[in-house]
Image (cartoon, rainbow, N blue to C red):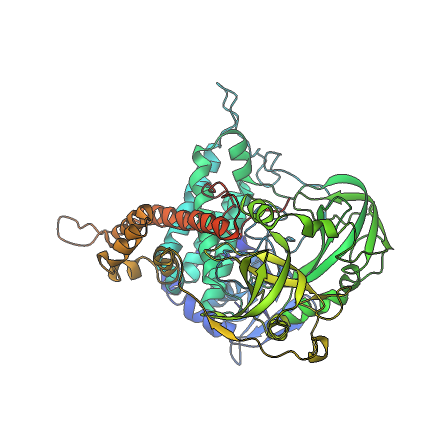
Length: 629
């Protein structure tokens, strides 16, 4: 994926790749790699890529997005049936042609970088139009002239239409093919096939499945390009999401079906007048090519609201967005200022995730803020930690408001993390993003030297066998009345208490339960495909360890996953038949869902919280997929 190219909607890529003859399809991946390495020159709405000394590919992108196949032109002799146009579309970032709220998985996220989560919770839809009104999937579909719903004429029960069933089966088959090939084998042709079926699902009134499929392709792009923001766990979560949704749609009815369909636009409801107090700001930097900032605020009752500024961009936009004025009302406050001030809003509109609308009728002016230890913000830290964790695991707000004492530094495989004591619970505080342009990592190292300091912090829960969270904001180590946005503000040695010394480094202990034996195979299948599991079976050792630890179901799922990967039938002449990708996808999805549910239970136990109910396939309630209230 080349960040220098404009966004291209999925249907354009699918159309151009689908028009290639088989001979050129075999050369498409090489063409994508070659074109992605060529410099791109932007002139207004036009981007020009020099394929060689005599041939240019021109992409016309009004508003920054290519919306039709005719907008990509090539100067070679074979145009318009050449390889270059399809290669340019395949190398470009994917535009989100399913707007707000279709799914949590395809929304722009805060700059999180945990390998233990599938994806960070949604904050703002990339490319959001900031509309305060939305259209649900049950409304008339303007693209097809049909309605998304299908009421059963005999019982009146809402069921999926034949078009939706067909589209769901196609998305499932395409996603299963990507899983079967793995990121190493999922080239441009397989990606285009999933994009084609995603577009068909959107036209059939399944925006959630469409957006989930586009999210998978975007993350496969990042994986194949070895992008710094790529996380294998996030790609595995995206694949589990699209397979789960596509699997459930044909059989779902009533409210379950409405949830699985999703909404084309996130609805905004009127919320009258609001008096908000700034909490903190965090940068947004995603592997899908979006960047910006999100500011969190709270009202007097402790309800959380967000103001976001997210658009295509990189680290420079993520750090610069904090100093841009917030796009709400007539206020001139920047995100950085709002995080410490207040806001009085009239005519407010709010999305289900707590995002404030920016319609023309919304008015906002600056107001006084509040310290974390003063009312009304103080009540956020008064909620017991176990209740906060249970709320997050049960699909609620995933931010944790903790009061901790810094105790040291812990060395883990993924890097060092900060150790802290929170009401007797040893918590591991990790960096939210490793990009060197963001100060998370440096700030964590400095805070490690303030051993013994008692601070209030804001962190994001990371489900896992140990209490773990991503550190987002904290009180100033010296001045409790001040706070630090750890993704935007740079701490200095002068900000630490006098006489501080580096905290001792402690080696990480082993996991309490060998769940990683199953999780490793789930992730291994995503990276290497079915063949890796077919030839890497470790014998009865892993299953025996799981059963000895009381995880008999995990052992059975592991055996079933290996069995599905190795199962190949032969015809009457002894030739291998094509692999059953559907069976392998079902076995992998069962293992992925079990791993997520087990990690949620272990997480609840580690924090002393009540275990949350396990999510259903495609419900979006696995680790890292918890919607905000």
